[in-house]
Length: 104
Image 1 (cartoon, rainbow, N blue to C red):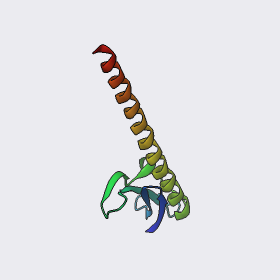
Image 2: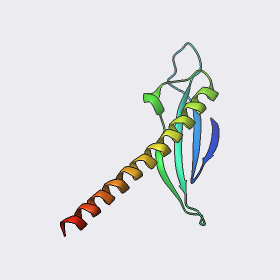
Image 3: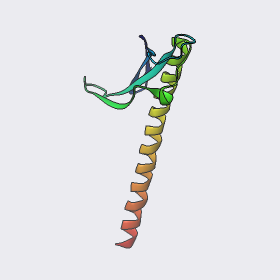
């Protein structure tokens, strides 16, 4: 198993390239896996916000570095998607609150 870590503000991405037991007879392959942890500032609390232990439907990569790079990219995309969703929810709440104030 090959592993890599990447810090993104407020998060840590853990990536792994796992030897594929189900790889074709043509050669060795690696599955990509990722775990994203939210780091709470000022404390040791950590929250897992995303995990996929077999990215891309179990596709195999020929080199562990390729699997690791893909896993890190997926982790980063998960963080960005979560931030976008939080922004959308906040905007929806603000619209709803403004609408309620006008109706009152």
